[in-house]
Length: 116
Length: 108
View 1 (cartoon, rainbow over the protein chains, first blue to last red):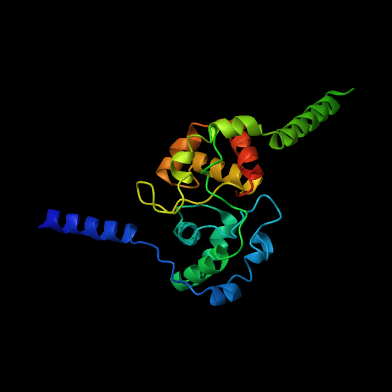
View 2: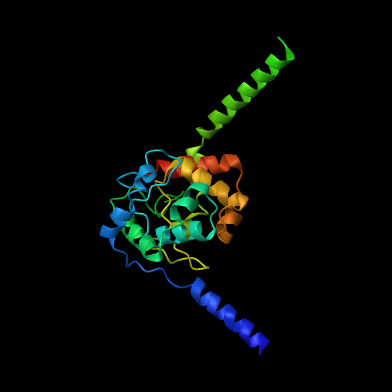
């Protein structure tokens, strides 16, 4: 019984860990919520200071993933930890929807490696 | 010159060289090194790697941010297993080279 319970909790944990991130945020609400973000990441989502990442056109799900990681400590970054502390899951979806829809300077590596 | 002045000079020299190192990534070597990254970061879309993870676009990303991110994976401040393994295999110079190349790319 104990083992079954342990296995069951592992199963639940796995189910949560692999829950797919959905691209269902509201970009308009995201714009309001991103008011603080643009100080470093730029109004157009392309940070001018190269120490900060460009977010414009980054994948929606990746932005959500990164924000969750800053929030739960899987990424340990002093500045971002403070920023995300008060964001709800809905806030994170909205902010990701906002930045990911912007015109981008980012690309995948496809076509950019040796031999391409 | 006193011993203290000599020490000051040595420290100053060290800073100058450290400062320079940041701006001197070798793009050509970076282009060679990112061959490995292409396995995950070269596939359009986000759900391509095990364990399932929304892999980001990294071409065209800002130089200093790429350097920080790779060092954070290397030190364990970021905990993605594949990226930790990759970053731990890279020297500081190789990280500079990769960042120099990736940040120089414009989307096709």
